[in-house]
Length: 320
Ligand SMILES: Nc1ncnc2c1ncn2[C@@H]1O[C@H](COP(=O)(O)OP(=O)(O)OP(=O)(O)O)[C@@H](O)[C@H]1O
Ligand SMILES: [Mg+2]
View 1 (cartoon, rainbow, N blue to C red):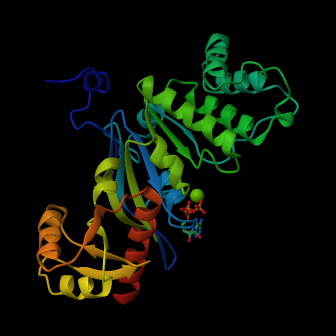
View 2: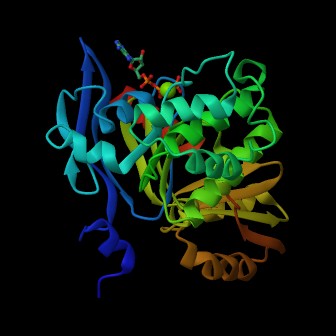
View 3: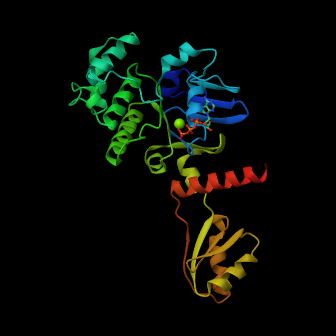
């Protein structure tokens, strides 16, 4: 069965963006290193990575602004390098803080922008001012807007041509918590309206809050990609409240399925496949320990992100 989204885009793959072996070298420095992942149609996709990890460079390649050293990027099936005009028709982007005229209103700026892309449509501009929550201040000078308002005008500009795919590079950077919340709400509205949204960030909380899928990169390399719930669930850590934690720890160290045993604030923390939890509990009780609690470590994305990027950095250093 072909769903309506697939019909709309004419794609069989279900991918809004497909990145395959994408690499960018600046001289000796490999800024983006053989990245491969895809962004499902209809997803809100978070592209996470520490400063300098290659997010903006990747987005630049996806948008045809930066030529890759090797690899390909496709948007809705079109190769960015060979079918750029088709790509640009389907995608709207806000990469850097966009340049607008400070002495003109937000509305006027958008109208000028609209004319430039051949879409002289005042109604569309009003609609977007509504969508971005800027209607009330639309006729005030752009230069007088707060950072968050400027950002929202930038997003409105990216939406002018009603793109299927929206790419936002750090849309909440420089915003206060209220501004960040507004942008998140806007991203949700865009997703509800059927757009695929790809946004980069190093602010984990907001990605966790709003995204259905993520890719995590570190030093230009992919660390993890997939559905948010799957990436968060990948924890094997069991936290055990128990009497005589040191003795319990040494008992558990001898169990085959248990990978790592350490103590944290008087609790035993072990790494073990989740399905072995009951067996571990039975083993402890049989050996005369009083187990008062045994639970999986709740993960939030921040823990997971730091853990994955730390692991990745360590193995990179070890392997040279
Ligand atoms: N034009 C360029 N010439 C040389 N090196 C570059 C160039 N553009 C980016 N780099 C380097 O490539 C790496 C990745 O940069 P990039 O801007 O893509 O990272 P980022 O993840 O977007 O970082 P941030 O979170 O700070 O925005 C960095 O080490 C950067 O210094
Ligand atoms: Mg960047």
